[in-house]
Amino acid sequence: MRIVGLIVALIIAFGCGDATNVSENTKSPATDTVKETEILNVSVQEAQAAVLEGKVQFIDVRTPQEFGETHAKNAKNIPLEILQSRLDGLNKEEPVYLICRTGSRSAMAAEILKEKGFTNIHNIKGGITDWISAKLPVETVSRSF
Image (cartoon, rainbow, N blue to C red):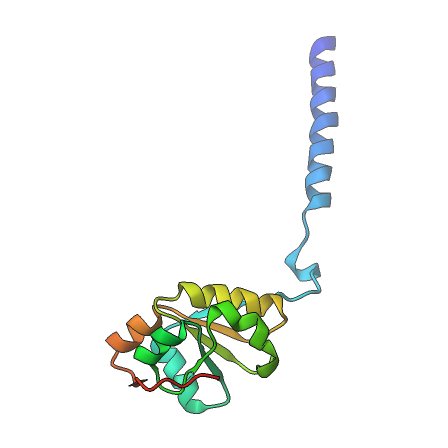
């Protein structure tokens, strides 16, 4: 009986210790005071609607050559490779819509903007490939800034 009592006492002692540690290390989302910026993945149709409404920054992060071949109407070209050096020309509070060929480079650009304090970031899923497939307006004249 003593052995059973000792085992029960050990289980209770170590079991409670583990439960206490778990609850001490677990934070409730309601207690977090810092709201992290969320990058929203949007369809080409959602992006086009936002661009038509206005007051958005519509950035194509592909190379100037890719951009010159064809790009979404009203997009401005800021290649991913130089994006960090061009952030002064963007408004951190205004919505930013990012597009590339398929959505990969624009996702990287979104992370850069997030790290630099931008608060309203949208990555266009499927990029210019889906934009063209959806027959949304494109331009072939190179416009860079």
